[in-house]
Length: 95
Image (tube, rainbow, N blue to C red; front, side, top):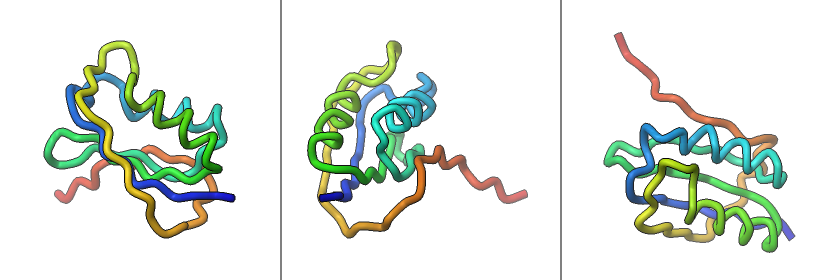
């Protein structure tokens, strides 16, 4: 059964390739959803997969890439969105 998690990763997680690394791991595990930088320095992730896969994904989120310093990971179950793939969401710049 597929579940949806909204994940917030806190710590030194911006500017350390956290989003790109998250996409690589999500693609490898078959997780669907997205990752983006939050305005307050956090990384925000929406992830959908089966329970066992999400547990492996959360384990990775607690470690992150080599230069990251994860202080906490919060996850809440949410409504299934049926994402097709996993994407890195970049900021929209308004000129």
